[in-house]
Length: 447
Image 1 (cartoon, rainbow, N blue to C red):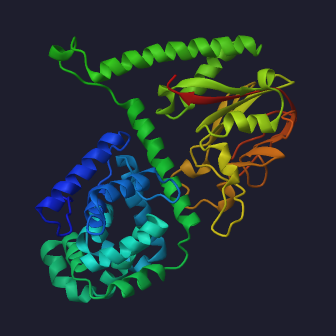
Image 2 (image 1 turned 90 degrees about the vertical axis):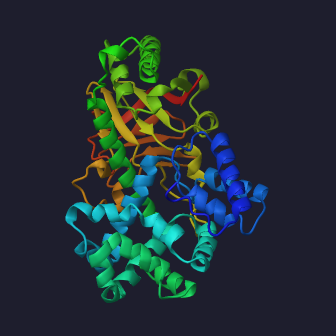
Image 3 (image 1 turned 60 degrees about the horizontal axis):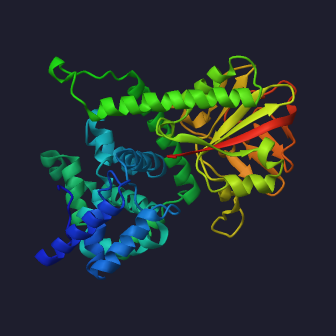
């Protein structure tokens, strides 16, 4: 309730805003944390009816490109870390000024409130102008405005020395945003004057940050132990029910892995390797039943058929067996239909996908090759190491940069594999060129 900003709505307006947000939450149960929803709803109600406001918010929630609203605590953390990263790189003096006025241990904490500098602290007229740009271009506008506030705060920091000393830099910054000494037009001129902040660059920073946090979260969840008192050991809990559900699901997956291993005539004990592959998948995906979407044995060797059966599913798992009995593949995080998307200039985007994509080898070697950007020690990842997926009417590619990790032709008969910068992998089979014996593609669903 701390950030339930109403933008001067009267009591009736506040009730309407409450109702809109509650109905949105009920109709979109996937939203677990999205503090931006309420202030945006309150702002929209100044200009439209309750029904129009709800429709607009539902559209913002559903829109994936450009992104307008992040809807989980994880993505909320990703946003403020993204703002922190691009601020330190593109407005270094403003970032240094902020760090200078607070202890090192609290430097990051300042950025967690970045969205409130914009949606809560700025004067109403400024927020309206910012919101107009936001509705046209997405959340990247808010990133720029937050950075512009830091730039202006740095330029005027001499006037705020006393406030910083008395109440701290976070309170002084909020107060500065509320009394910002420039008009809306000047604020926007400053924010769009920050150079080097393309949509593609921001997306790369966001994706790398997201993958890093997910990897860290998975490590923590795997090492976390449940601690319960003796009095609660025999009580049914949501966690115990989940464990039973996961155990049942795991047995189903093991049976399916063994069945597919027999059908494909895979080398001995490969069903265990398939189960290992399952353990490499993102945790949220393992809660779903795998669905065989496409197999060359049943659906033929045609790239067009592949697209018809697979392109709308996200994510997908590609499993290749060569004529030499080598088995390898890729977990592909995005839908294959994104091969048709275009950039701002109307040109077809060559590569797509996210850093959650990974390669794997099951036989004769067993290994997983994640995106190199997941490694926190690498502060900067070149664009040539961010080439995840590519496809057209003639071929499919996974991984790029100084080579293609997996390439298959339009007849899904021949392929080649090489080292690539995106995954820093070795060739996935001995001869590099291979003939496909079987290709299987799996999706994930609740049925």
